[in-house]
Image 1 (cartoon, rainbow, N blue to C red):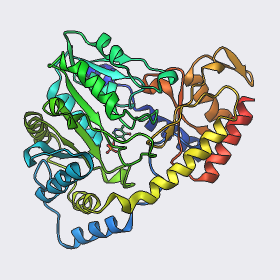
Image 2: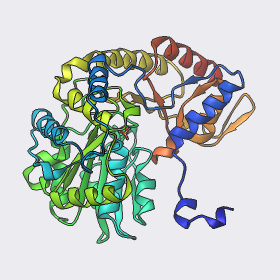
Image 3: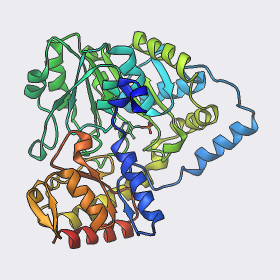
Image 4: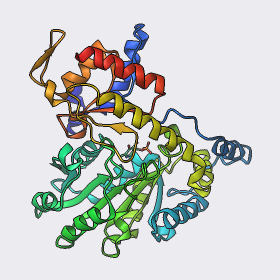
Amino acid sequence: MSNQLSDRINSLVPSATLAMAAKARELRAEGKDIIGLSLGEPDFNTPDFIKEAAKQAIDENYNSYTPVDGYVELKEAIITKFKRDNGLSYEPSQIVVSTGAKQALYNVAQACLNPGDEVILPCPYWVSYADIVKLTGGMPVEVPTSIESDFKMTPAQLEDAITPKTKMLWYSSPCNPSGSIYSKEELRALADVLQIHPQIIVVSDEIYEHINYGVVDHASMASFEDMYDRTVTVNGVAKAFAMTGWRIGYIGAPSYIARACNKLQGQVTSGANCIAQRAVITALTESPERVRYMVNEFENRRKLILDLLNDIDGFACNEPQGAFYVFPDIASYFGKELNGVQINNASDFAMYLLEHANVATVTGDAFGNGKCIRISYAASTDEIKSAVARIKEAVS
Ligand SMILES: *Cc1c(COP(=O)(O)O)cnc(C)c1O
């Protein structure tokens, strides 16, 4: 009965990362020993000091609807965090708390885009950007990058992609899936291009800001005075605090955009979960040093997985500077047969790894790059070692 559904929903592609996780679960249920390196999810538990805050909130009867855009105390904690970590000054009217950074992004797209508006997405981009944009009738404009430019868009590429219809630029830094980080100088050079095109609004997704391995300092587009009034800074607690299931994200934005997101949420969700919001006040108020142990562990695993993957012929890896993914270019396998299976593209390769190595990864096609696959190293070192050994065996 899909003809009874809207054209919008029929043209929506299911999230490839969630689909791969579901497929892995299915194979596990059939008794297969699948190592899952497809989901972007820390394998740590939420830290105890945050769990305690949630328990206390339950006992203190935080059970009513919250303000649509978030508790006042949470917005204050977010304002303090933006100042402390990013040098950004926001008023409470510029902050909106949402059900995950994903909903924050959806709100912004709904608030800003008309059908036909173009949104520039440097590739590889986070899996949901293109479909969130398409749901509004907006048009994703993909700007390809490659391992040679460390998967970063150059100012000349940005200039070339801009048309009179360009309404927004969306990117994540540190980037999911490439792990690349735009330095302050690189962002400035992109901002210089945007200065000639004042109609363009920037969405800067900074959810991996704290998962940074120390080579390139995190920088925020909104920290440039001339970009502040046209940048939406998106962040959340899912990754840095191992709180994916708690579903809290937020924006700092020009107030007219924040007001629009607030209005939308008021009609669609009535706001984010009350207990999770209370817990996030504690998460953001404490020093980021309290969760540094997870970043240190990710850093060890990054080294491990890069060493192991670089030892496989046919895998070309950049050195990710943040987040917890590697994005190897595996195009050297295209046109070849592996164990009788013809590999023509990254999706074939990811499917081959799932079926012949019992390792779940995600095709780069889902991120707008058809030459790579994404491998998450938010997994134990034992899992990483076994997974890469299986991959090596399956492709040799
Ligand atoms: C995980 C992720 C999100 C979504 O975060 P939630 O708070 O879980 O909704 C947004 N952007 C990027 C780049 C991500 O990796």
